[in-house]
Length: 107
Image (tube, rainbow, N blue to C red; front, side, top):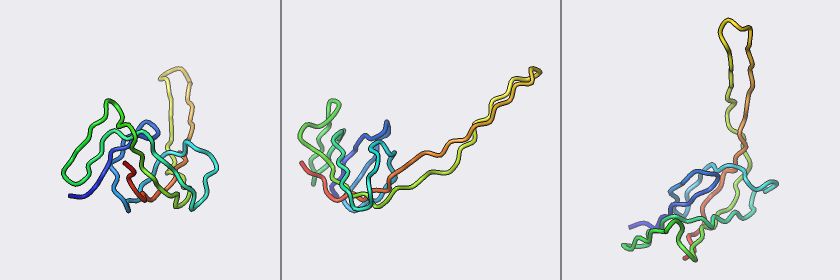
């Protein structure tokens, strides 16, 4: 069996294994490529045939990852309108992300 963990970051949960690359929300400002990002909120760990569930997090376990680089998501358009009132508002948003590579699950 492969080792994997379920981590929580930015209000979302990710299933990660060593070597995986994923996009996570940019909650820590000003990280550069090559910097370390540690996920301390580990919800579940699977090592060989043993699965450990947290209540809600597993104590003493963290996931070490390395920042590949900052990215921005695609633009989302927010449009609000009230019929027959002449009210229209348009806003846009682009979320900031980090692309990270998972290095190790430290138990």
